[in-house]
Picture 1 (cartoon, rainbow, N blue to C red):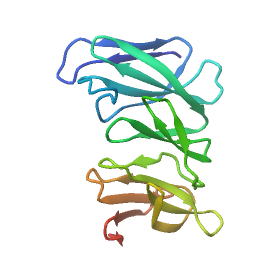
Picture 2 (picture 1 turned 90 degrees about the vertical axis):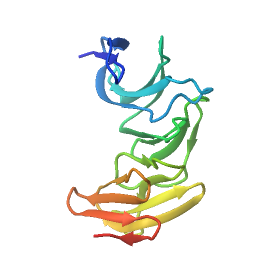
Picture 3 (picture 1 turned 90 degrees about the horizontal axis):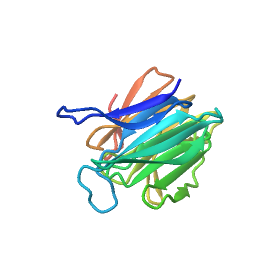
Picture 4 (picture 1 turned 135 degrees about the vertical axis):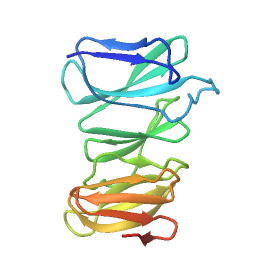
Length: 199
């Protein structure tokens, strides 16, 4: 039990201790895809650390900021379950919390904006790797089904509908395609621009 986070430059060099806790339990960690949003600090990067707190009440998300010479950290949210995805510019995150709410979190201001959508059965939402589109599942028209949608501002485009059970999905690196699977079985690839299912 306990967490100790080390950071080492990609090109090699000494390890640095970014964060230590004796009474928390590690779950998952992910780097922001871009430098910190607060004024173009080159080499400044946020690490999102998901963990179980000492009180073991839900999960918690901590942002650890690597500023080259120093580290800082702050607790930004709690929930169970708790899934997240970074925006490509590193300024925001998309959260899926409590299996019932979707939220956009602004990293610099700390403000959270809840989306009006009713989430379907899925785990991690996916922010597009190239722009401001959001990918997640909502409840389908039929009971216990899901529709996979792309949200762009207030607009919603359904790219896969009426899927039973839990659905998982991911963007292609160029944001042109989406891969999805239901019940970890058949893989479906969708050309987003053309609305075409490729298999």
